[in-house]
Amino acid sequence: MFRSLHIAASGMAAQETNLEGISNNIANSNTTGYKKQRTDFQDLLYQTVRAAGTQTSATTQSPTGLQIGSGVRVVSTSRVFAQGPTLVTTNPLDVAIEGNGFFTIQRPDGTLAYTRNGQFQANAQGQLVTHEGMLVDPSITIPQDATAITIGADGTVSVTLAANPNPTEIGQLTTAMFVNPGGLRAIGHNLFIPTGSSGEAQTGQPGADGRGTLLQGSLEHSNVDVVDEMVNMISAQRGYEINSKVITAADEMLRTATQLR
Image (cartoon, rainbow, N blue to C red; front, top):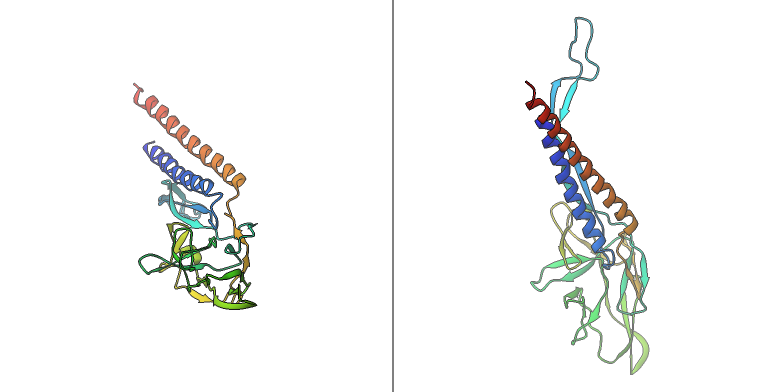
């Protein structure tokens, strides 16, 4: 009887974590380049009272055995890197990745991080940066007298200067791929950093070796479907509720057992 209390409690704890992931998805439903989280569950160890195949008589065996579970736990939170919808902004410094890949960003401490958010700006020196001022890697510097900027599908960056109507190439945007993007560690600010599980970044030209192409004047929206998250939230709520009812039922049965004379 006490086992059912602990099993139901593990279910309630798991659904609490599940709801936290769902709420984070909903909160970031309008975050550029955000990839939704999925909470993964795993059943706990089983007590084997009678193993399958145990002799029940001289000539018969138990076909299934008897095992009693001990509950559930959250084993991981994984990222779903499906492509989000593309929003046209017409801003020449907004760039969306259509397909696989990440932009490389240089953090203030000099280390590299990776993002799907291509919402770039130019700083006072004309360098291409994120909205927090972190440099895009490789560095792209836009001349002060540039009248137009063009970013090609292959990442080629060209500008039109006031004194020269012909486009001038000033740099190349690259994208990075990982063997296991689900192993990347999210550090906030729309950034990911590699781990031993993700593998090292494989940087190259957009459109080559399986990398996605770039689309100027657009941004990749969050891939969160609010309707799906609402359904998941209701499911988590009902799972939590039914586990709490199991605890109530076990409590009533224990009360009955302790009142026996």
